Image (cartoon, rainbow over all chains, first blue to last red):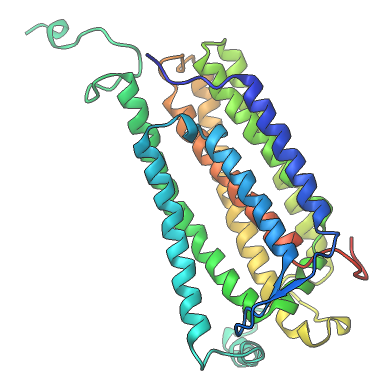
Length: 127
Length: 232
């Protein structure tokens, strides 16, 4: 028994699907889908264009992982490891966001820039 | 004891610690995936930071995003997807027991497409950014028409250059790997039973493709391209 050989036709089909999705996501950027308001500080405005673009990106990622990277034909153990990778990423992002969105003393827009004039002279004309 | 007594005949490339080639193949790709999980977290740090600062400075990020050339971004996405296809076909050529010249051809095609990607990125995009004073630290000029968002636009470009730069670095490392693979393929190292270096390098190359699949919308499309003056 040897490894599952994915037919060339499948690869070409996935390739075409990825190209179509790339065209789709580029085209979608030129259409205004409007905003959603969450009422949560810092993430009050969620542009639906962002949601559409990321949804298409996730579909493209799944096509690459499942077919180009052969995960569809891999062992259950490999599938668990792959899923765990993205789970860790989800933990990283959600815990960071939970912290950032729940603190009342978070730096508001403006404070980042005021630090720059203080730092630049210290770099001694490097810039 | 004669060597032949402990050294039973086996397919080329078979490592003795494994039961059979199937087990070896699973271990190979599983090990590579464990590395790729660390890569997900490596890029994940940048993505998480991007998410926080985009939330803090949304108008600046949208302004910055619209200053990027979406044509180059889209074309480069297509080029990189093409290189993923040729990489997959190189592995297929080995799996299906095709001639080594076919493996070499697909590997070289992958490198050519990768080179086109980096050429467009560095020679056109980054150079144009430099001339438009959009590189933070190198005479960045905050334009009047950016309004209140202006002072934070450099932050978007910091993310842009670090994220695309780290991605480009991965591609440059990929060239080294692909060159080695091409030499190995040319020497006839791969066959339908043993092609582990092709398979794991393919996983790496596709991973780099996936990173770009997310960088493209996050950097080029996040601001939307509608009803904006000066859109490319």
